[in-house]
Length: 363
Ligand SMILES: Cc1ncc(COP(=O)(O)O)c(C=O)c1O
View 1 (cartoon, protein in one colour):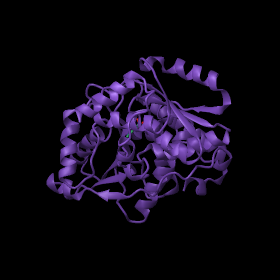
View 2: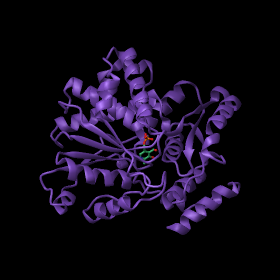
View 3: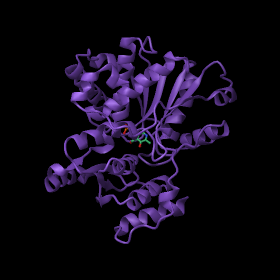
View 4: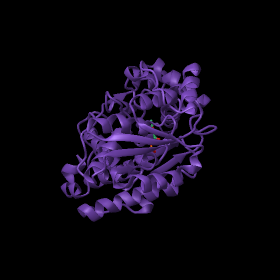
């Protein structure tokens, strides 16, 4: 949609088609009825279904970034993140479809079943995985990797959080605007989304601002409640807005679209700290309660690191706001069983092997 409205963007990048879009929007009416709030709609935007290979929010970012990697002549893409990174797994599985090999620089995180499964699948899929001691060594490791591999490798920051990567979520906001215009849902007053690297939230902010500007589904800017799943300052207001403004300027410079101001985006942005708990990858009580409630009311399964925390915030938002709320479902729900049925390759470093085993035992 974005590339139809702004064909000049083709001079920056022409996205690969990796996902299945538009993703469906579902009403969570059983849940709001159970809460006695039948008049306050809660919708779920099912980006978890963006691909049967591996879905979730990262597919939209990768459609752009993998295309950029290919256009720049790279043969291999490297992602960066925690051991169980969804971005790394999505990048590996989708890169292979367009003839790119892949690798990942990964740092330790708390053990969980889903993180261990992601790492298992990543290793079995043949990514060149390089474990780091700690996340603080990431900038240096990225620098060294770029120097070693030269132009043949395209090294992405965590979450693919660049202005170009965020275009994937500008597009997503326009897709939502079209669904509203088509009568699939009423315009939400609040959009709730997990924020980790800031790429998704930044793109959404810009995309929603443009949807309002062109009258696509929205006549006013919704509040974007970004639920921290990684701590401040990674997910600080300044970082989110900085990336959003950069993305807005990219659209302005390339297509002549007006760019949103910091003040316009800032009033819409509502970062939430309280759902994070003890930190990235650490389950919370409110998240566990949201997971149970969601499933009891016919919703899809939620993971404890991302979607349980954002769903907990979405449920609170419906209760507080009494206006339509949209929960953006970002964790892939594609089955990894074909990967998990295979044994880890013999040369996997011991600490990664241990992480996978501990995750399996914790299930
Ligand atoms: C499943 C899932 N949801 C949400 C996020 C947050 O998105 P972003 O990194 O673009 O802020 C991530 C990435 O960290 C993720 O993997």
